[in-house]
Length: 454
Image (cartoon, rainbow, N blue to C red; front, side, top):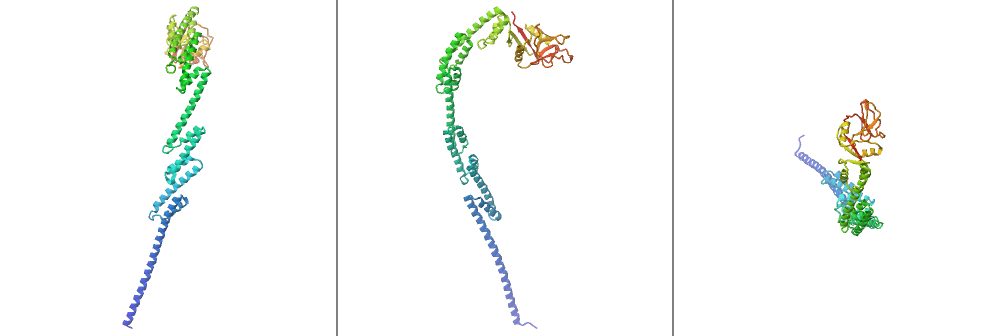
């Protein structure tokens, strides 16, 4: 059946109404979705602002737990605004706060030095610099108290802990100098009293050393002059008694213009007089001994003179008056002279060399002479001595001088005529004796000896 115009109009109206309702439904759905997104954004913003508030509050009240809470919230917010920046800032704040709390814990435990180090790292964080400075002020006050209790070493140790950047540094250094000066003054005073006691007890030489070490402290100069006068008087008494060595010893102790301006000239004059007097006495006695007993006794006597008053070169010169040439550097022992020659030669050549000097290879006839030779051979050289045997007699040894062979100082297993090698000559190696071939190249020299005979 054909559709009427009236019906067409009804269908069109129905379609329009349906479209209207469909459009309205879509719009409503869009509005709901929009409202949901808007609500989520508001919640994130509120959470961000709350995290900032918690962070600022935690910093102000130094609350570790709240800092951790703020850090967790900023971590969840991730890239929202400055959340990542705040995560790093919270971490730094938490580390600083943990250090600060650790420093306070150390301070309460009496570990001021460790606490001060941490406070110094924190700078002005929550007044850490002021707390550090308070520790140094406490050091200073304690040091003053220790000083008053005569515990100066503890006081200096505390004051030495205060660093240069502290306002207490200069006062601390001044206090250290004061303590050190007082300590030095006390030590000087103790030394001075000890020197005075030694002077009073008559120990002049000891007192002299102590007053000289005091370098003018208090009345040291006065005491030194008094000691000089008394030493000069004692030296004159020694001279009268013939004790020239003791006289010289005392005079040399006042032979100084600085310490003994009043006695210096007299000491120098007396020293020259007693030196010449001693030499004259020695010379006269030496000539008398030579006339009565010969060279040997003369050498023994001259070997005992005081070489400070009668030097070795003067002794040698005096001996030459009696026809005996003493080689330069020779050593005198028991009326004999000895000289080491560091020349490599065969045993026979060494003996001939000594004979050309009017001597012979050394003969060692007792333990005392052996000990002297060991000291003379201070460089521990291997040296020929004047002992020998005949080729056909491996058991009998002789001295070049014909003296009896009553003493020997062979090393372990010596003499051994090693491998039948005809070792017929004696040497020191460098202490004990050894037998060697006459032309052995192992020796670095030899010892000559001269006998004093009239």
